[in-house]
Image 1: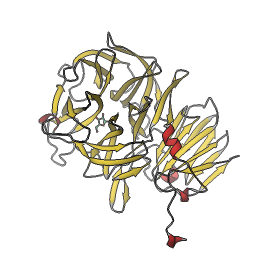
Image 2: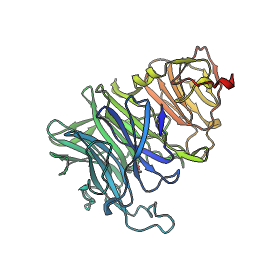
Image 3: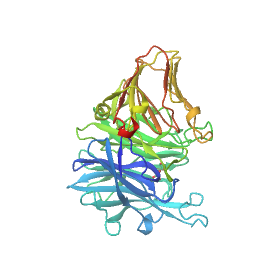
Image 4: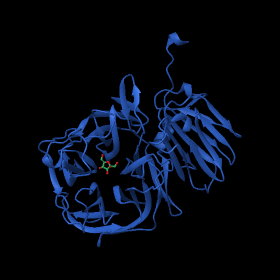
Length: 448
Ligand code: FRU
């Protein structure tokens, strides 16, 4: 199945991006996938590929449970290339009790996790029977980490060895475990890192450097204490990593990855030009039913990571921006992939995109999706950026069920899931607005 613009679930459920990599001339995004219903269940790795980050093709499911250690799910993980092969690292999950109501869900977090490897010769064939192995068995010492909640291996090549970071929890606080390997199959624990008070478990950690600066992305569970809405959030922070001692030190508590608070579990990769890019899962509070085929979950557009004045920024990928090149007059002219709009929004001005309202007040940008999100109680309807320091420039991508706003080329981003957006745009402000489609709608000769 082909898609343009954003990666959407091919049907039913998707969550985190996994194994994001540019390999043999194509971008691969694997993703957490439950293929039977539009809700979370036994995890498989779905698979999508692209040559340009814009046109995506969903391929058959890559990983699925086959071994006792992953019988209840192939949880999140990452990919590296070595000797021409694709190495996929993931967390195997095994429930201790069977849920009598639904075998696809655990009972009260009673399960164990281990870290597993699957090697694929070409990134197209995945031998789920013969090519899997356990590389880090379940953790049994609570002083190291948690037998249940230790997961999401992210692997990178250091100067003299391979390194892996895992998310875990110890004494009720989130922590990271760092492993080292010479050959990608034998791993030894080499470091632990924590910073108290930032959630109780850190999911999907990712460490990399940008222009020589270390950056950590992580998703602490229980970070927000305010309401019944998702309490788990994704953060980023500057963080140094010393390979010799395997110590990872965060400069501070970090800041939100995205201020819409819907994006979760971001994962990075290097693009074909060597830029550090990242995508993340859009948590959708409900499914979209298209012709009786429900789907739930999307990825945001690929973003380029940079560090500026001690803050991490996320700008839309230049190839994606360049592809939204067809000037249009109204959203109704946009075909697949939706449209991009640019404008300046000054203090006191309000933009309404088919019911999704973006207001600039007190220097902050505030988005309100109350009119286009019938899922009150399951997600926040209103969210805002901190005070904007640089300018007033907004670049907004609108594609069916997602609105992504990039402020001043990624100083802040604000992304939301939406339902039933209208086709009209209103600006209470000084304008002008420019609109560009990825593809223009084809008008059939009969509709003229
Ligand atoms: C994050 C997460 C990961 C886990 C996966 C399971 O959304 O909970 O920590 O590996 O999803 O689907």
